[in-house]
Length: 277
Image (tube, rainbow, N blue to C red; front, top):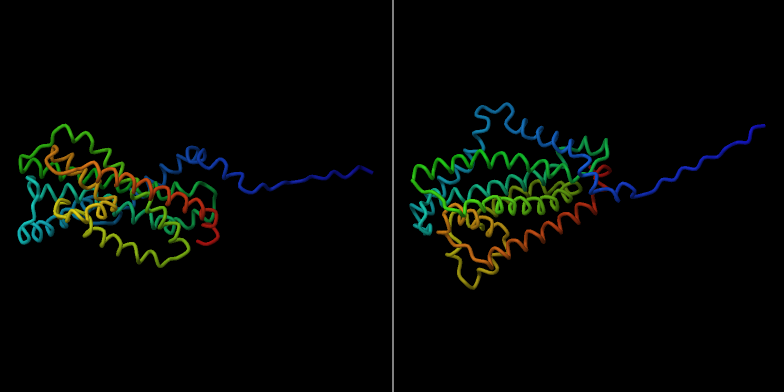
């Protein structure tokens, strides 16, 4: 008789986890596919297509000009008020869209998550790429506004990508945290629009940070978008508008904090996404 051979299979938990960050690079093609899919379907079957990327901040700007400039007569630090507001609407619209898309991205890709392994972090990051495209389209309108008012930036404009990157990580960190909660607690999908709406009015979009009373400024700087928005204005205005070091450092610190919290929470719950979703 032939001796029976025994085979032993060892299933080692967490083996893929040790190569997680390497897998982010290995699955880069999936990232490109998801990003392109989100871009292509963003305005699918819409009448005016990519013009929605311009209309949203433009209509909001018009409302803010009527309320804060024509009625409230708030200062714009020597910058034409439409440019002053639109320079703030660009980073805010980018952040709010990125935050909303990242927060809901896992729910929108439930079928993909439940069928195949890949680093789930790819999904929310890919969803933010759509907002980058929207930002680029809206930025063209800002150029038109600046040409209309014959108001041109100085060398500070080269720092604009740095503030955009800061806004990207602010949206990513908070988006990852909410996305991980949204998988298990679907109530958060109703909370997200409310948070975005409140954030619009507590961020210096329609007004200058300088009108905030001095005793509340440090507390106000805890909003990471304060430094991002004022950074955009500073870069576009050629240094005319205010941007202090304390404000910028606190915004950077808060963005780093939200990114750490978001990534830690996301990675801690990521292994349960396929079961819960």
